[in-house]
Length: 544
Image 1 (cartoon, rainbow, N blue to C red):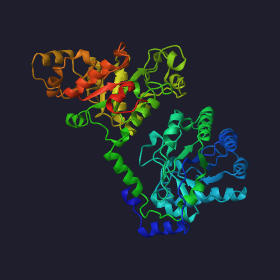
Image 2: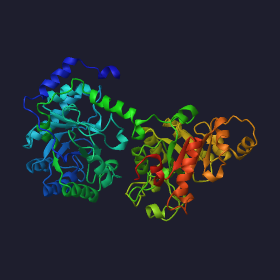
Image 3: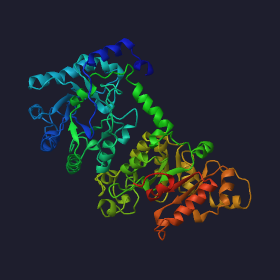
Image 4: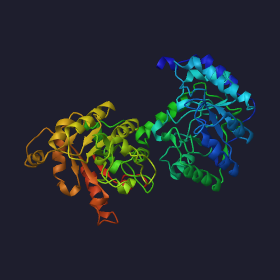
């Protein structure tokens, strides 16, 4: 794969010569945003365009005939509607005929895929596109000359390589730094997005930097994982309008690029940002996935922070949700606690409460429903579907988050074996801790997770015996473990993770006792803390 990314320098120089211009480039004005839409959703014509026209916003609509475009006119536009977007002043961009992911294997098909959309544009009175969006947000440097030869001047990629796709975006576009055919997405809207996510993306703009926003359907009927509810989209655009942002199409960056040098190495800006992120990590994905079986590595990073109840929760982000996991990653946690409950047909799901009612409106436990029935439920706070454990583990692996498993049901061998299989499948067997010390948990999960020090082991250590406790951990509230026991457990090889949770400090509204406990335990040198996000400012993180 590495060799396929290496292309002759002459090829890159040729691309640069096609894109360069003699005109002097303008500096990006303040409060400027590029707005883009992918995949030809019917809602682009029905919902997005009228709202953008009301606010005087520009935008680029990237067109593909992929998915069920040809037959499903409930979810996809007609070409006449696409032409109407052009007549209304919006840019029509190229997204390949078949939404073709660009790889070394598919590269020979790219020119024909681009021409198919260009031909449809010509047939419907639309200018041949000069802007392109990489399908699936994945790019291949060898495709740059093909894009340039097809008349493409600007191409938007995803947020990778600077950040994982799972976080929904990356850095702002820097004219003169980023290659114009590899313009990064700053914010990629997801179903669990809130106004604060949009504001976070837009805030990455500034002198010399332009935020680039990516939306799919508003709403998206065929692809719910990239859906933006209509009311949220209206909220986002209303905020941009009230705050006085100038919203433009991708083609409009020409005046900010023309005359600037094009980087000879298209990947150099990304690699530079990745090195900077690794040197000063902010997100969990900037750090290595923690290996809890290597005590030396754990202690070198201490204190590890473990997000209680599935991540960072708020009035818009429910506990034990994929949204909460992503928020934990954005706040730079090292691990998240995943609450696991089994469905009637034995599927492990991500859910905290004994009853679904408060979170979803359905009255009853997870165990009374099938997996399909639970997945059909949505959280009241953000409309996100209840997730399976596998979805959560995959997301944690993508975001470099370790896992603390809290098995809410009475242990059953079949369920535990499913959990163990999933942990292995997603490469988290060195990054997982189990809270339960039940004998079945020890037997079935001991190879894929650290298990707790047993009461007997704790008493023997307290009595002065020398035990080998590697692969063990202690977890609980600080009052349960005498301070002098902490170094004894650590010398035996165990890790110590106190819990600083709101429900344990009910009479501590000023957080004074919690803060004293944290300070004392940090002085002793515990390996980490499981915390509610209400306490994360004790560790130098802004409160959500």
